[in-house]
Image (tube, rainbow, N blue to C red; front, top):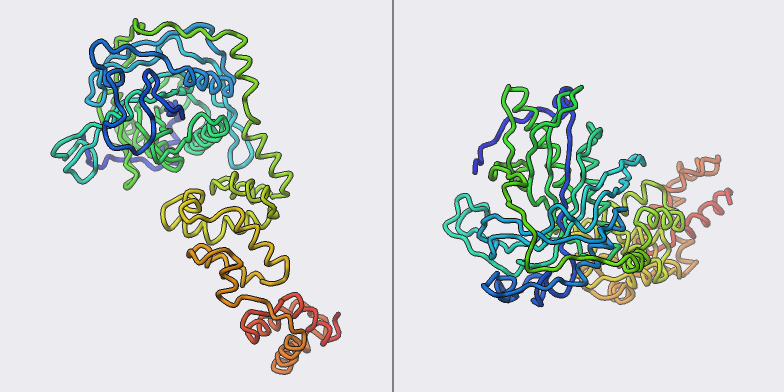
Length: 507
């Protein structure tokens, strides 16, 4: 595997000469309790090789049995992608050798997928829609996992030895394959990211997978080629394997466009191959030559009966489909009164479910968005975690937001105090009320003390006071700030404003 940095043409320069063509293959681990063809558990993170049996290890004489729940999940995925569901289909053996393939073949589907000919409409940041045509969604089993030890990169290049964990071998997968995506032009990286994000939201809504890309339960292979502008002939493609974040999908597309363009513009030709994505450097490197379907010697799996879902079964599963995520987002945005920018920020931060739970618990939509997208989001980003995972680790819940808003609404805390209380909650000091009690956070309710502070501030700032008397009411903010400092942040800013305006004849 080459690790040398390859020439890359600038993105705009590349697109001046070539049109990108993408094909995305997304592998989704299904959230079944047992594997695709045996009864072994599928829990993530178990000790290596503790969740195996003769079937998923491919031992002689062991016979597979299809997981009914996995088939149902595959059908529901196909229906949600507007696919046709095959009334009859078979599994096939995909033959190739790799250390993490215990049988030396993968049980998959080839020319007879469970779902085919669908589409998914993807909404881009500017509100426009790009329709991604789905070629197929087929069932298969996952492979084991190779761990390369002794090198600096975790890859086989430079490693001293390799270990294989077969816990993942046999976990149910659905692979969703798009048709070639043309016409995206300069927006190709954005379209790729938006498609995977939309697909992830859909699969999560279906509750067929936890779609945790960082754990590998959802992985994207990015196929990319370039066509000279005006040409209708597809170029040679490369396949960047196992890209495991939305940001990386976008970056991988952008990088490969520049790399392909540099090779072609220099008079070279593209090698059909798999590529490795490097998150740290943002580049791809060569893996192995890419095989064509004929090289895998597909043939029907003789140990498994065909899958033939009855029409009644398919329609019963169709009735279980949830509200499409895009429609749900529009409904929630209208209900919450969010602007497009506010809703986009919530979506980009992965906060939709958390905000929805918080509003359902009794918080206002504004407070839910404010507290989840503020300090806790900043800290989560610093820790390299998403907000939901970070909040779960800290034990921070929607109930804390509801309680914090209640303290503000009741007049005990102003915004500054509420922020201090929230920071205390994040630091593990207890509930918002407990933090406020321990830190002595409470607005001064003594009107006399507030009036005395206002009078002192007015006397100390006659120029500002004269401006307000002359009708320049916007200058009142400067006096309010000084009142807050005078009372160590424990004044009610609204009450201070009212008193100042009364004193200066502007009430």
